Amino acid sequence: MTESRDIVLPKYFLLDKEQGGRNAILMGAPGEGKTSLLQYLTYLACRGKDIYGKPRQPQECLWRARKHDKYLEFFNLGIGKLMLPEGSDYSLLKVYDDDREQEITLDDLEDEGIDYALYAGSQDIIRNLEEGKVLCILYPGSAIEETAFYADLFSHLVDRKSRKWVHICIDEADDILGPYSSDSYKVQQKFINSASDFRKTMVNSVFATHDYRNLDYRLLPKTKWHMYKKGAKRMQGEPTKLKQDYINALQLEEAELVFGAFFDKFTYPPMKKENRLDYKLQTISRRFEVQQEGP
Image (cartoon, rainbow, N blue to C red; front, top):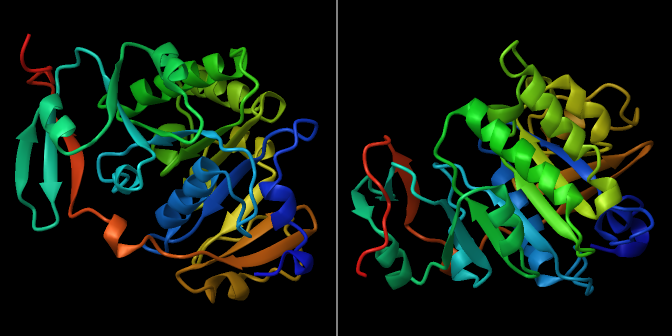
């Protein structure tokens, strides 16, 4: 990639306190590499690099750890920290690629070399923020409970005293921020109100979804940066030269980044095989407590 040929990418990766953070929507069909792109963007943010390999300030990173994620690659890279709810009545499972399951404790996480911390509330997440680290937040509650949790977390995030940069990735964002109902209207509005302040509080965010129409429409005006993977539905108002056929022809490790009237195509590397793990962590029903063994 050549920076001199790009218009949008250099601006997106620039950390400028005057311009503030960037809110982005990442769209693409299932299986077309949205999560891999989120991982790569988070890796760059942690390591303090832009897409051209140039240095920039390392960021404090937050990752929504869904139970089907393979976010544990961050731990093989030495940048992950698992955030687990304190005193929650759920069981933690290690699920292998061959579908074997193993119930584990916090001591087992230590044996695996997985750094972790317990949180009683969203302020504990804020206190654990660290430059060059990805806090992988595991939340076992219902969708509306998780939306309320992130609304509270984002509210504390924009009110924090720190002037360090924060990078947030919310994969499958429509799980917790889809079209609202009468029950979710207010809690989703709180979520969106906080996200609207990200730009002014040095927070960069990426909300990933298959289709932007699956998201609460109130988020869309807050997300001026658009990333497209293959199969994504082109949003209205995009540059006329960015055709739907062009988006559909993208390869697995290609994406388009759009801002205003301009867009850049870029490529990114896949996760190295040596950093991949053959299992993922999942939570199951609220029957057991995850407890520290020993005194």
